[in-house]
Image 1 (cartoon, rainbow, N blue to C red):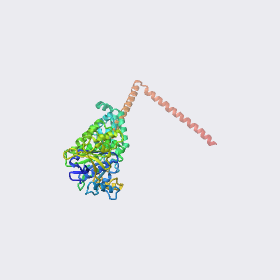
Image 2 (cartoon, one colour):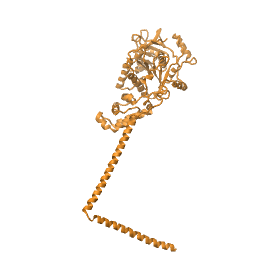
Image 3 (cartoon, rainbow, N blue to C red):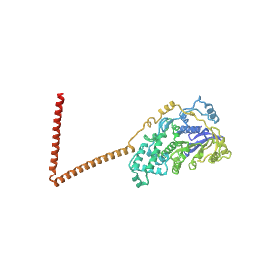
Image 4 (cartoon, rainbow, N blue to C red):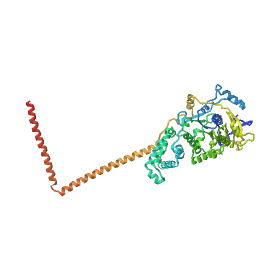
Length: 507
């Protein structure tokens, strides 16, 4: 039921609920409590966008989105329910189908590793990643500026550690130039780096860095590749997860040219567990997020936040989300009831639907849907049945994942790390050269000091000789006495040995 202008999401209010492709870059929200169908909605949107030739990036938080790479099966337990849903929606063209997929993994286990450099991450996101306070962030900014001034390339965590050691060594100079830089503050940043490394973050920094164009690929059939990020392990480090996705959005924003409103997006980006992006984010970072989301639309990128509760997204960002799909929310506490009422107010009203009541009544696979229309205005909210996926529901086996990875269009491009000369090697070489120069200077100083002492002693002896003419005679006399004593001692020793020898031989 999809066409080249829209994507069929479901049926509500007696009519199809369609996501217009030329409005898909206007961002969106998919919300709902755990187990209400968010992941399946995510899957059907990704596979329909892919079929329309739109590349997709999605994080697989629970591991069950990987099935999008394989077609569904009539032998699957859910086959009967899926077929019944398709028939209920009038989907006469419903067949199982796979999708072109590239698997990614920051840790390089379940997919191709994704790397970036410390320089590309920048001080703002690094400060967020390391949970630095304002003072520590200021020192980190100074360190990055020093690296720029001295031509120090920051590729990995070792480079940043070496740079911080260098900053500690010249802290008084940096304080005089930029403001207070103390060793304790630098030490705190270094400890945070060690903690990040212990969480497995070291593998994310290095080369070859991710080429953004590899997220924008289409296959030979014109289908957009679905980039699936394995995020189950990554979720144990939620700050790394959120900072990485924000970095990726920022890179897309910097990399892509302005295109206005294209006929279809260049990429649709799904940000699952979106609340992690905004939790404890300082004002400067929230401003950056709001700016990126607001401006990246003109680059042809649609951003869809996926979260349990729509109030997890700040108002400035939420106001930019034109396409909304809301699954069930439960109200067991006054706070949860307030959340439902707040969510209800984000939809364009429908006189025939009490949204606040409907949110609590939705069944699995149902959602409240409001999508942008051709004139750019959101449609009145409708209670809709979401269409069934064509790809597999659930995870892949390790063998299936390995086969798909082996035929990936980026196979071999990122799998081996490259370590070229950067800040760590440059600073180490500088330190060794400085140590060698210092040792040579010390040796030269020692030799000069020894020569000076020798010359001083010779001068003293010469002065003494000239001042006391009998000095040489006295030296000679003393030497004579010493020789005489040695000769007497030797003669006496010989006589004694001779006598004793005779006595023993007589026996």
